[in-house]
Image (tube, rainbow, N blue to C red; front, side, top):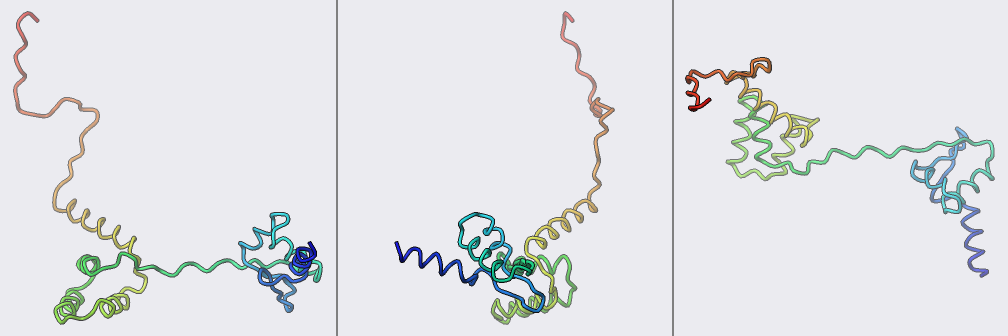
Length: 167
């Protein structure tokens, strides 16, 4: 039982690793998640925050927001790059891409070259842009005729069928 009490005392006297101090701005710093978990009474974060507040009662709080995830290129492959260049690249870019593929340039080098051309490239956004671009080309090529909801009669040149006898 003494070991358990010593562990609780140790947790209650040291705010690390959940919180740290910024003595210049007089703030108790920590991640947003740790501040959120400190709202649960009895949690390790709660004990650490109470200890930190006891040591520095006039300090404010500074929750650190997590950094945005870096852009993931999961799903990026040569056919996607080819389609994107076909839609939004120039002829010179497409020629260079084909030359790199034909010369046996490995995928990481091609990917690096491609990302230098399009630094804000996003795989999901690119797939959507390619679909919209292709759909726009189809709509431009073929006239889209919308049905008139008020005119419910079919517009055909087939004569009406004769009525059945007895009607």
